[in-house]
Figure (cartoon, one colour):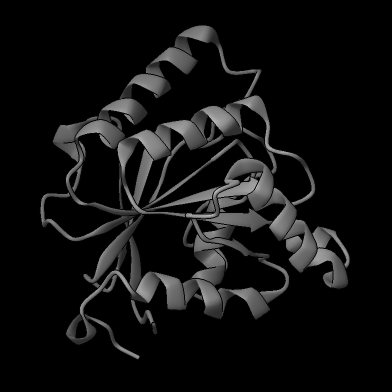
Length: 200
């Protein structure tokens, strides 16, 4: 897919602020600092459309990025950031839950995990939530540049076996540094759109 004019549209904390044009939404979930914003920038060949930060827990709102009026990338706040106050965690948790439970435009969830580590307890909780939602999902083993390229495929298989042992959810590697992986992700995403909606 060739995205020509991606736009940041809105940061929302509740349904009244969500876009109302009924475009499909591809939702990015993962722990703080796992690389959701960098994923968006890499996929659309932009450096700064999605704001990245070295400080975990920076994203506190739901950010909607309009992809040529075909779909949205929706960046959810990361979980598991210990320095966020309990009140802030509860607040963020409520509007994430509200969005995931009730937003009918959600077409696909992309669940990012760190390829270097076994899934955390929070990762497993999120995985179980995604499974219970019944929504289509792709597991993305991110930061693949942090391990030897010869070990990527075996590490991805091991992570899938650990998190999704029955193997019914696809698991792909990804890296914002090694852009060799993004075409496979686009091929997967393309399945969720009508051919006439996609500009190649």
